[in-house]
Image (cartoon, rainbow, N blue to C red; front, side):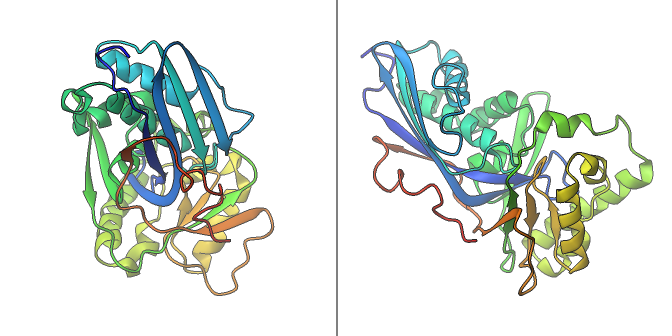
Length: 314
């Protein structure tokens, strides 16, 4: 084993996330109790990636895999690459649905690489991990809650991404409506205009501020607090089913928004008894993950390799 690397395998449990939360575009995020488990160890040569669950048979099994690419970027920051890698992924977060699967892969990769480097945690502290993960993702709103857990407010300064966490009030009960079809963040972003009317920007700024209060202090205000004029209406044409479900839930008094770039819908309070989204949607009631991504030593055990549906309730 090269002297710069730890001998034993390490593993990371990374939570799903929902970003934007309506008016908090590219700033607000929430960690959810649905997780990917990833393990890695240094090998004598080559790269081998195995994937179970979401993305199995589709995702790359070599250096192109996002976890490995994130590990490589982190090893570069820490001074050099290992001779080889063995990576195992047990994925439960749906791919390309607006639940932060790419952020989970990036955060897992950065933390795995740091843990495999001798003295890596001292050389790359928590703030540096957030900055690197946000660089790799392109924005901090998903990687912040994935890394830190709970409700996060993220922003970017010249030095890089920063974030703070806030405790979520009792009564916030996330439910996600997950469609079978996928969406692409790049397509969703391409639908956004270069400019928006000043009145829409002012409305969204006020509702984002109110949303922080509603999530942390007064969930009774979640419905007005989640009104958005910055991004959701512009993206509606790309995912009409998502837009229709958001409207239907909001008309029923539920604080519903597009989760991230979609097409998943997030409700921050419970839908009415008997509400039926239709057969095109899986409905999962998920707790808020307050811990964020967690690093432990050893290979994945029986619990981590458990059913890919673990933690979901339909």
